[in-house]
Image (cartoon, rainbow, N blue to C red; front, side, top):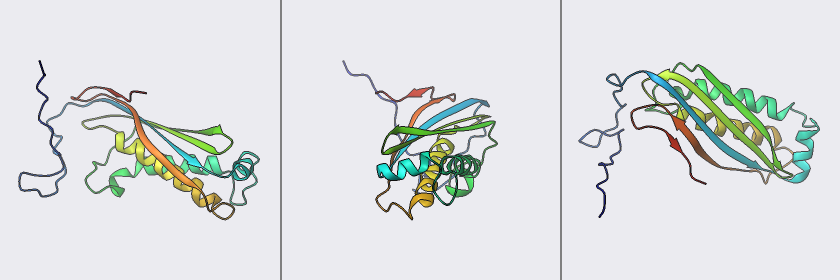
Length: 164
């Protein structure tokens, strides 16, 4: 016996197909969190330079952390239909998954009527682009991604956790 799935529709379009910002005024304010993750792949020599703080532009991971935090706070300005939110917390962790990979994870929290998934994803994306920018002079083979949502909590649709 199959279960009926609720109707799925794209919420950023009106009935005539026009773009719109979703009206969240009727939703309750709840605590919302989101965690996103991404990777940056580099040459092992470049990772060594980052670890040893030998990149001439400065401490790559700390600059990327600040860029990610700043980006999360400005997500509503960067993504056209995204609600501008007051964020309670933005945390970025950057480290090395192996000798070729920088791992980036962002955790964002707010009390609002809409979630912070886009803020977490934006933080990871901009942190990754910052790593690229700071290292491009010594490594043109840099790859960013994948970038994905790990989990989110709060809201009327409930919690989400990516299955592994």
